[in-house]
Length: 106
Length: 265
Image 1: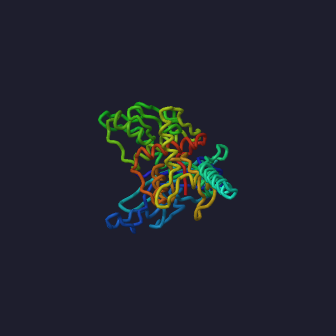
Image 2: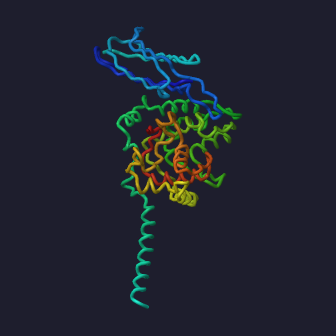
Image 3: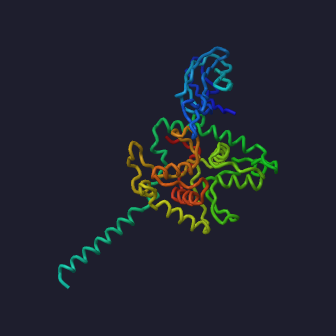
């Protein structure tokens, strides 16, 4: 099972810029490598990442074979209201992970 | 005896003394006060990665290890937690004092081997393969419980011959390049080898996440890398030679804080 680590401040002031950091375990196999007997190792990567804030998409990224194993994605947003920040990662072989965290605006 | 011959003899004796002095000083160990973790040589970005548990990729393995700790396994149907309870208490400081002497085998075992002994004898399960994801995860989880504690090799007289064997391996020239570990890590640490700073080679962060590997790896994996770099044939995983070397490296790093899971370039 893929494990994800998410760092979002639990509390923030309204209008404050917050940093969101995500890390997920994934091999990100490029599809360009061969094994010891010369057989191509099939591609197995995360292809997209998206983040929603109370249902509204605030960040989206496409990932490609050159991206490292265990991709770390960090971005900022403006804290507007209390609610849920949800994350989804999708990839090859039906890979799909969803996580969410709550944030309180003071 | 002519004055000339006397002078030649004197010169030969002086030369022998000089060579002896060079051999002795070449294997001088790093003074304790100058010992430092290679964390000090990391780029600020890599330091930040290690310092924050939500950006340290080694923590992904720790999470896997925590799950394994609570999972029942083997014919005995027991989990690690059933005997050892809360790892934060029972495993505190354990990684800082391994390799330790195992009376049943009459030789020291490292933390990975200790976990596998527990697995085969207490849980009656198949041992994990060396360098497998599960063994690294469990070792990282146990190692994390000692984070920040100083490395404290046990003062066990039975370990003495193995410690000496490890020191001998460390100072023995190996491979086609004919270099010993000490020639880089004792004599030339802090200088550069190609673009990289030569570290003091302390084992205080293992198992650690190496950016080059894109995964977590054990100390023995690192030792194999060094041996392949010297164009020497590496030992098999789990070989007693590695355990002796690990023992010497831990003794050499005594007092340095454990950083498991560390991040290295």
